[in-house]
Image 1 (cartoon, rainbow, N blue to C red):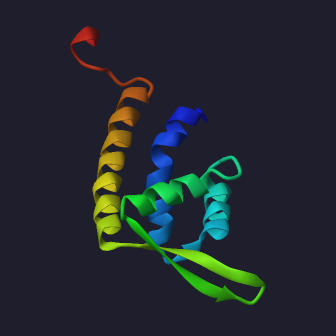
Image 2 (image 1 turned 60 degrees about the vertical axis):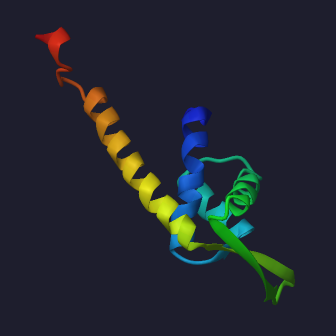
Length: 111
């Protein structure tokens, strides 16, 4: 898939993953990579940006396998952003799918 298309939606994907529960960066990256082809290290800049925007917060939690892990949590502001952008994305996809469907007419040019 075109990297520009993916780039525009990865923030929303990360927010949606965090809606399911708090997670640390490596786990989020793995969850995302299982669904969408992304380069290693793609998630961390997104997480930093989302944290700076206040839509995710962070906290440290002890790990049995090494140093404490930084967990990410969706804030109330993040939930609002997710809801709004999810609705926009679903509407946009519906509009694009209507254009792309084979055999569909587009309006006056086809009349």
